[in-house]
Length: 195
Image 1 (tube, one colour):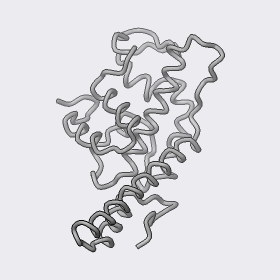
Image 2 (tube, rainbow, N blue to C red):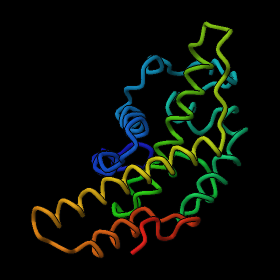
Image 3 (cartoon, rainbow, N blue to C red):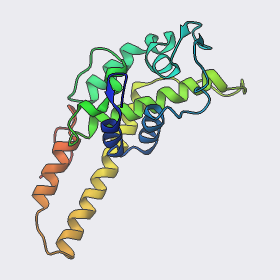
Image 4 (tube, helix red, strand yellow):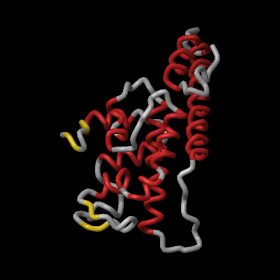
């Protein structure tokens, strides 16, 4: 099955490898077309920007004027935090099935961004409490989420190394660290786990 020029079965395999839980859940619901509150919206005007749209998913996440307004911030965030560079925020960018599954930063980053966008969209579509502040798309929030995720994954890897040494009497810690660094490196931290 192909939707948005995306091989849907393959994208679900890649979504399964995302460690950021909220990002993984948001992308899963996005590609399975099961985000709450927007499925019934077809051939109608956007409640956020007023433009007519056919598909709520592609419109709200990539084509809505509010998203286009922050597109430069999204692009600079991805390009700052990942070795994979993008030039446009589009359905093609959301298709993480096109990237190597050993690369862990980019799919997690896309998941974190999609979740942040979903929070903004939900607030604009469904918020009835005027006292709640509108969530903003901020590069610092995305960066903090990603760095926290890297630290969690680093902790898990170090625990795995200790387990392998204690239980299995295996001393392949350099191999574990190499694989971790290859999967989780960013331009700012090319070796997040020193060898």
